[in-house]
Length: 295
Image (cartoon, rainbow, N blue to C red; front, side):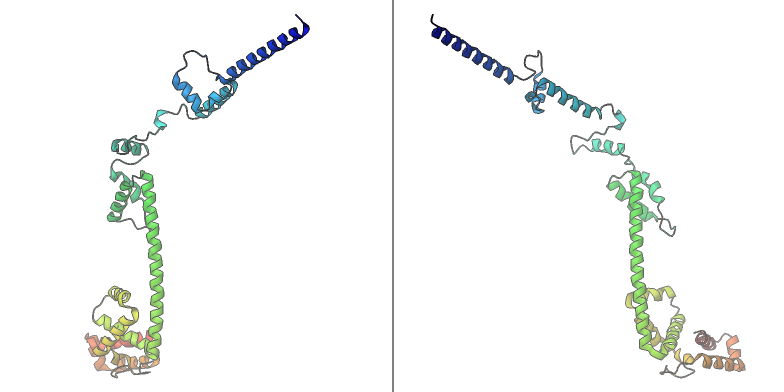
């Protein structure tokens, strides 16, 4: 065999060996690390594939699995009484009730009452029974734990007090504005007119709270003008203006005039006798004078 023939044969053998080695390496690389392990359940292989472990080397897969285990270990060993299980079926009311019970939701709505009744208004006033029943019903409807029901009630009470305070402030501002406008309208006779109106309300036996309620409906100025008109018709103005009919501009008695007239009446034996005998007109006149002096 010539040297050329020998060289060609050697080259061919080398090429074949290299090709075979390449094929073997490719085949080995294509095989996952778990290939050849006996009795590997198909679900294990599926899980590894889902986690992407089939694309890793055995060492990389071991590291990834260890990390996953350590993360899961944080939740392993939790006592049974600390586990909560959601019902599989949304319509499983029994399952939901069991879950709510674990969360502290009372099975009997009246169990809310103890916490709710502990809530009071800022001034110390206790909640009325109707309020307690409303809060209890709302808490039961929302499936609140017992402690949360009391907090809900406290929040409602706080809101109501804020609303009431705002309304009272608005009413006070409106009343002040109405009084200011009425005084401007009545001018110099403001004090006398107010006294006539007050006396008229007293003679009619109208409770002050009823007058206040009426003011809230129609307005302070309208109510006072109404009683002023009634007082003038009833003759109240003659005691305020010194015996005249009606209140003329500047016609109301001054404090000094009222004091002088009071002194005269005290010297009038006939008037004193009527007053002591309980005469209504005499007492009204004396009361009017005292009010004018005090004003």
